[in-house]
Image (cartoon, rainbow, N blue to C red; front, side, top):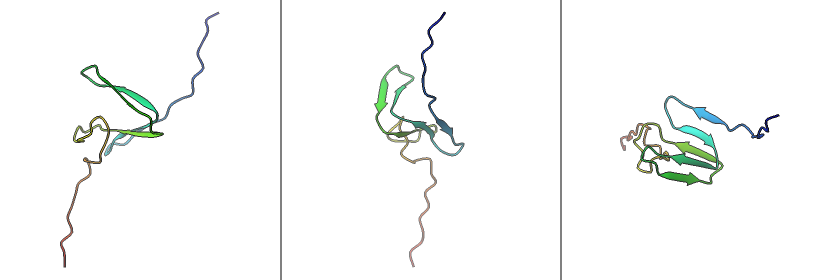
Length: 70
């Protein structure tokens, strides 16, 4: 009989207009092979590559608009 490792399911939230939200902590392997870690309880991974903190989302995907001053 084969031993199976019991693991809790991790939650991943996909938003078409935002980052990939993961229950943390997480370890992310980048395309160049390097690994980055976050110990936060919820992690936002950038999917648009506009973030200055890539792979972590810094909300650069949001459109910024300035309100005119009166």
